[in-house]
Image (cartoon, rainbow, N blue to C red):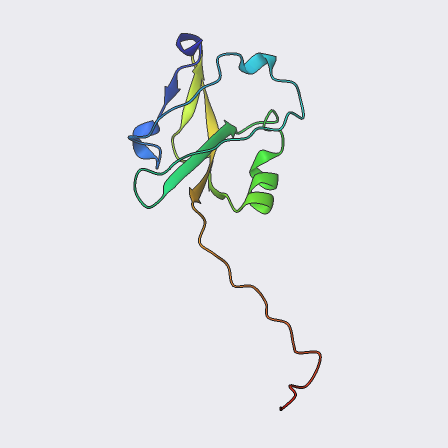
Length: 117
């Protein structure tokens, strides 16, 4: 229910002007669930961002998602937060641009000398 979880500070982040997708049953998602997100870019690329509470309830995402998936951690000081009654709870903002730029593959050394015919 979005009325119970108002988000503030979007205007000061990379998320400004974006589409906000919020699960309507977020409390029913089991621990250790795998979450998959797909996107089709209208232009050359699209940026996908996830934000998680900057607290002990973060599921260790700020560390693992950056290491595993090339997400950039914008930190918990962007101003993006949710309001619980009168308490402001900041979010870690984690973003990734798709499609990813290709990385160069290491080339293997030849195992045999070229033969001349």
